Amino acid sequence: MSDDMENGESAGLISQRDRDLNFTRNDSRIFNTDRTSKEIKYNLTPNRPRIRSRSVSQSSTDSYSSASYTGSSSEEDDISPREKAQKNSRGFSDFCVKNIEHNAFGRREIEIAEQEMPGLMALRRRAEADKPLQGAKIIGCTHITAQTAVLVETLAALGASIRWSACNIYSTQNEVAAALAESGFPIYAWKGETEEDFWWCIDKCINAEGWQPNMILDDGGDATHWLLKKYPAMFNMVKGIVEESVTGVHRLYQLSKSGKLTVPAMNVNDSVTKTKFDNLYSCRESILDALKRTTDVMFGGKQVLICGYGEVGKGCSQALKGLGAIVSVTEIDPICALQACMDGFRVVKLDEVVRNCDVLITCTGNKNVVTRSHLDRLKNGCIVCNMGHSNTEIDVASLRTPELTWEKVRSQVDHIIWPDGKRIILLAEGRLVNLSCSSVPSFVVSITATTQALALIELFNAPAGRYKQDVYLLPKKMDEYVASLHLPTFDAHLTELTDDQAKYLGLNKAGPFKPNYYRY
Image 1 (cartoon, rainbow, N blue to C red):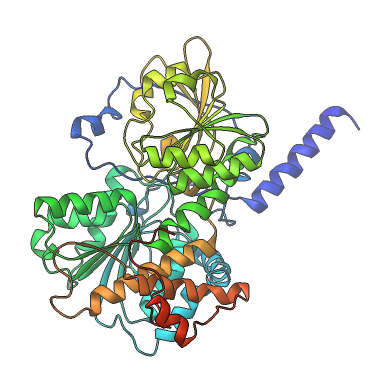
Image 2 (tube, rainbow, N blue to C red):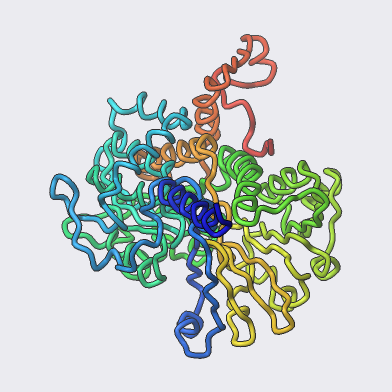
């Protein structure tokens, strides 16, 4: 057999394999509402960076995706979902997804997620008969993944009416969105939305005929922002807001400080069961997954710089150190910096080490942490990505200039090439890399989702006057309840205080077991 024939047969086999697998990958974004219209228009102007479409085999794009095994997230057509007339099998059409016909694949993904979300499923079983959310009309704006679908269906089982959009233009799993639409949920989301699509989807969830929302479940504050900006009278009728991200919580505190927050809000992000689990353990696993899938990099001996040593930074640092990377940390907070030192990491300034980085990861939730000046000084081949919620940490806009060439390598992997030939590897265009390029562990999402569900139940059923027009933390008793729902998975058995011990500690035997100031 000739070499040509062997190569041809090999290529045919690979092509068939890839068609069978046809993986996709999640992406993530958070639209920065502080951007001006001028900045938004920038990308539409003729003076845009050179974009080189590299010839890439199907295997180099599809096989490096995650959490989606069906092909509905692939770029099989360029028709916007907004231009399609779709109905589910029962004639329901109040949704906008990529392709309703792929709902069966999404249903399988949801079923897989349910197996790894024991706490949320336990809450569903325990509360379904009582319907604690009967009458709740919830606007959801979060990542639409299989794990989110389990939350959506749990809230519906508890009595809520739901309309849902995505908080990221890339993180939606299209098959999952199709499965929810097939089940009759008004879902407006698809992977690869434009920014205009993003706001259109949120608006379609809010402004529906005969539907007055009374609760908001937000991730990043975009639904809250849009409702307050466009429909202030409707906003004032909301009973409560539940927010799970640093960015969204920051916005809520700003609204409260300025007197514009006219409804009570629950800060889920800083509840113990969110920040100490999702932020730490989820990021500890998913950062490696995202980097491996996108770049195939070996971490042993690599110089890695982590910007920020909060819970996310701690998780990323631990994971990379465990694989033999040489990890340094930047910090503004002396307490977090001291923790990094005690954990064995060098605390440095970005300017001091930027030329030597092999991998640069932002985990701060701040803006302009990595500027064009820093990017210009990075070494050839440096991998740059963001693990913070907002897409403002890396100044990606400064890279969209005529002298730089953007070369698409894989889905959500771009080479940015300087005139002298230097190139850096930018992941997910600076958006949240783990939800952009991999997936997050369902078990950890179960903890966060259960916390969100309890926060919604608490705010919706609270008697008048319990919560003022301010931002609150979840009561500690509920944090403990969320944790208790997940312990049976590990066959964990709690010790019970004796009456004498409880009296000595000044505690109720049933909890809460720690004061609010306890830091875990």
